[in-house]
Length: 113
Image (tube, rainbow, N blue to C red; front, side, top):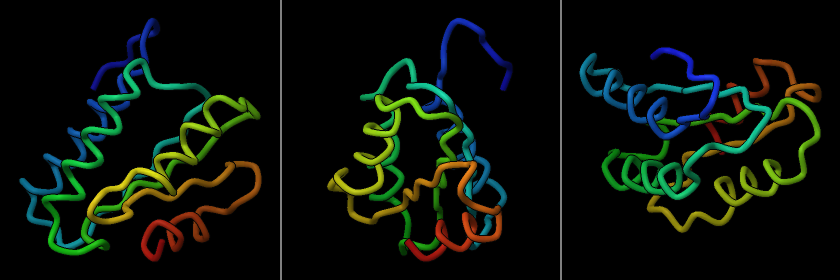
């Protein structure tokens, strides 16, 4: 994917990672997304996560770990919603603040959330 300075197309990133996961036939995938702002289309992010959660065979097959950069309260609230209140078949989202975690902990959290 190519960066677009005027938009944060998080849903397209997630979709591409999931498409690659299926194409390659991986048993397990963890997608790390470092973000300092809200996605351009929050509903699309919610939708793609719900879609993936409904398609996977178990909750550990595909996981998304959002690593929040900075202290933006708005993005923190949105990420917390994705992690705790998405009402998807499986909880495949984990959220950590980048400055408060090491990557091994974030990876473990994504696998076992």
